[in-house]
Image (tube, rainbow, N blue to C red; front, side, top):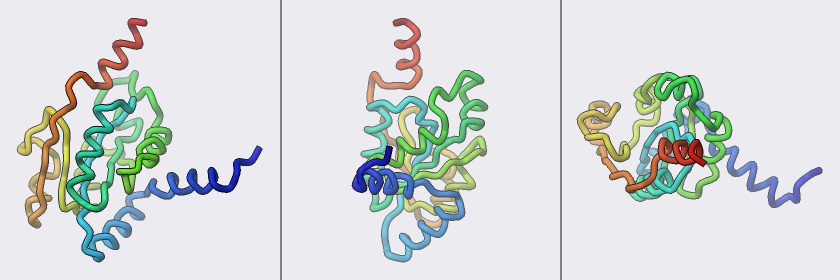
Length: 170
């Protein structure tokens, strides 16, 4: 069964926001050349919740273009353990790309997003909550060319761990 043309158009619009690293580099270079300010954040975004959405919306306010680096499934497992992620990488990428405040999504398989940050060269690097500027991966690189690093406080009461715990106790 085919969808009406408008729905197919929206699906394509979402899918077009998911980039390979090479495509993302070209995209960011083009946006920089237009004088646009690029903001970068990253994470697992395993079970999307209001805390994530708050972080992303606030991050987007720092510039014209919000790029989200998304840990691959293998990377999430190395960080969070063998039972994670709950949501597979392609589904997480689609969810991120469907958000109006997100302009580009790119998966990365490394344990840190440093190489992706180097490819993007963001004007603003944003992380949430329990980070300090000193322990954010990419801070030295972003500062080296005059970029800024920002920490956005977590929205109290929202975490993937608490969502998983709640579901287990149902």
